[in-house]
Image 1 (tube, helix red, strand yellow):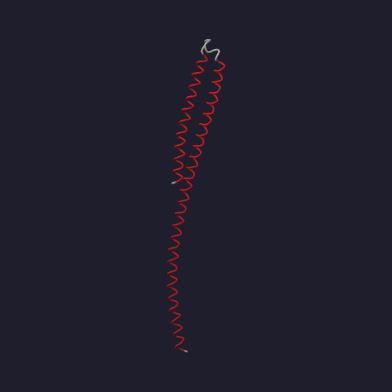
Image 2 (cartoon, one colour):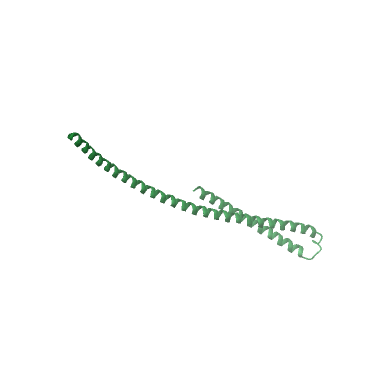
Length: 142
């Protein structure tokens, strides 16, 4: 139950973070598109500013790369966590089945041993009765 709760929290955080990263990446791509289109136009109004524009575009390209890398990293982390959760869940199910079968076998063995013990106790009582009768007979004849 604890593992399920933790996995649920991890997945919720992933969904939220992924949406934020995708939104940020889309925003950066849009900004790059707008700036590239603006600086691609001919005209003297922005020619003087093209040096500053390429600095901004370069910075945004680095930010885009970072967002893409971070998004890929959280997706990989989520896939790894999901696979580990599935593996652990299957291992737990196998272990539970194994232990349940062990309990069934031990319970059956215990019942069988109790029955055997009761039979031996009855046999012992019968042998003791026979021995007592033989001893009593021997005393009478001596």
